[in-house]
Image 1 (cartoon, rainbow, N blue to C red):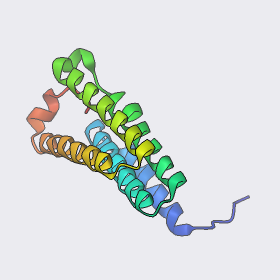
Image 2 (tube, helix red, strand yellow):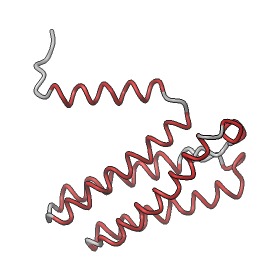
Image 3 (tube, rainbow, N blue to C red):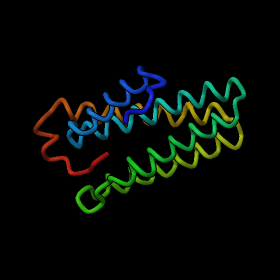
Image 4 (cartoon, one colour):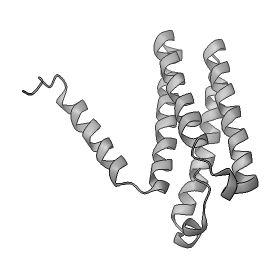
Length: 141
């Protein structure tokens, strides 16, 4: 009836993340996307350094998925106007830089994307500190 749990700690972490996602508001979900992208880029960096090419590529692929399929996909271009357009272009640039990093084992490209993500995430966190701004904000990243 129940499968054998080979890694209870991993199962516990997965359940915790799933609970966070279910209970998070849209703003918190966007912050989780930033955290996820930053995490897999950091892992890609470690794999690049250790010359684990396949794992590096998998992590960079996940980062691209998060940025393109998460952050960029949830932009509201109608409500966000010029800001959403600029963010969309920046996310596209980040994805291109990640592809470049993967193809050329370029650590500086990974660092550049991480810095850009941290900067946008920081602004997003500031919005969270001001409920009035958050309620008016229609651009979802």
